[in-house]
Length: 155
Image 1 (spheres, rainbow, N blue to C red):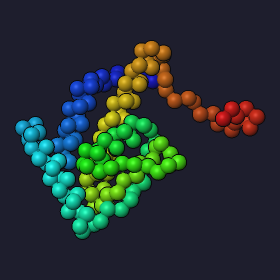
Image 2: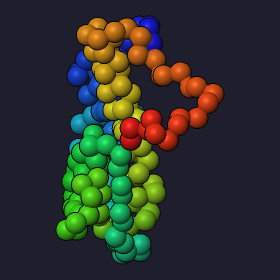
Image 3: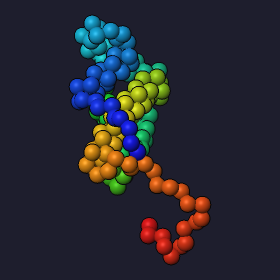
Image 4: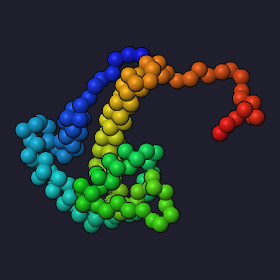
């Protein structure tokens, strides 16, 4: 795979995350960044209100990679929620007690947006490193029209 990579710096990614955060907290401009802290408190109060009308239930979230899991647990903690997992649950599992309304309207949509941004950034960094350090063509392997004989399967 050849081509140009968007070289995001860590600062670029942080600015993108902050932009997403402002969107979910209701702040529309950089000038409202200070108001985001107030918005976070407002969201925490909304979580408490949701508890009265929509009691928290236990959710099980499963992630396919450590970056998404780390991002999600940080998001839970930021909102004052406790991520946990039970003994013998997979490391990729995160449990949380939270209202369905909060999950549906704020937590999950925000996570999806942040996670997509993070995955894109990680993918671009990985592609750039492979291209520069190993070989500039790392496109997907060709798909053969015949099936793999069982005796050659090394999985």
